[in-house]
Image 1 (cartoon, rainbow, N blue to C red):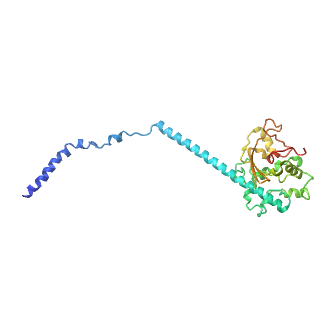
Image 2: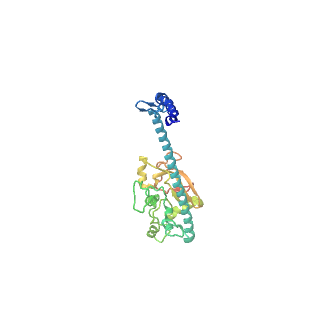
Image 3: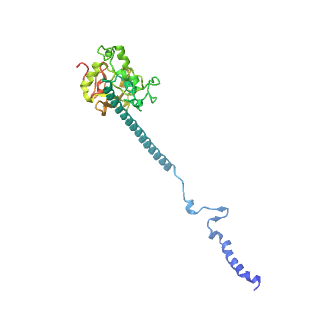
Length: 289
């Protein structure tokens, strides 16, 4: 068999296949058209989001983001309260240790901080919610000031500004020992004159509050109360109040104040001529009664 005869079957086969590939190209490959490639029918049927669908997705994402941010804010607030509770427990423990060592009450929170064996961490005197330390207070004090430095002494009524019944050798010495030299956030009655302190112990007993945090409540924005707040700025907050008691417990109370006449119940009347007993005891009567 010659070379031409050996190639004939292959040529025959090729010639048999060629027509179907060339002549029937359009039928065999439906995606090939004159001018290039055309997408399959099932792909061409896909479409994008409509405007309504897109807006719905965006709205759902906004709602989820709002819920997430609210949850984060609530968790942060709860975390700050937890830190504050720990601080108040440290203060009450340090106060009892001071009383055992010195034999009398501390007259300021700074006196606790000056004794590392009693209060190892002075930052225990600062609430993480302190508006002065966080830079959100209306009046910002000196570098080392905190909320307590600005408002604590406004608890003492003007008529008790000078009192002959003192614990120290002189009134000048009394002022020195009650002076705060460290930043602190909490209200306390340690600087009160002796008659007021004795009265507080009498009405409160072992449940007497030694330190109070009011900064987890609500900042008052009522214009009718601003004049009173200027005289007694510690009244700028109301609602949730955390109280560290002599028995070692830290309890929560909700305090709301009315006007000077005490209109409305259960509002506590604002008494500019008396001490704020309600912060430190559930049972209270005015001094001298």
